[in-house]
Length: 126
Image (tube, rainbow, N blue to C red; front, side, top):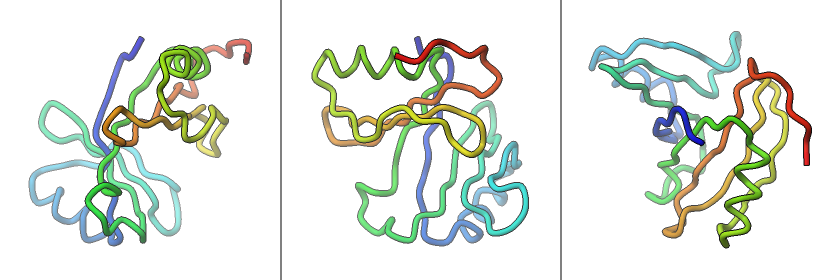
């Protein structure tokens, strides 16, 4: 079901946070948008990856962490989780960067993003 996952740390100062992780040897693998004010970066760090997201309201500890999970079908995964009583915060929707994304909360209230890669063949939407 999930073929890749990485943490996302939210910060009010993305440029400052990026500088810190670059000191650890992180390399930018993806940035959004490609030009202009930075909103999100995915970094290669060691054998894994980490996301950094700009979020002015990321002051409470509960607002600073999220988990991103890639799934074969965002809609099917949301439907299955909903049937098991998981709270769906945002329904699956196509995003400007080309992926389909939904947002749920785990049983402790942590944010979990469910993403369907842009390069996957289109599946019928339920």
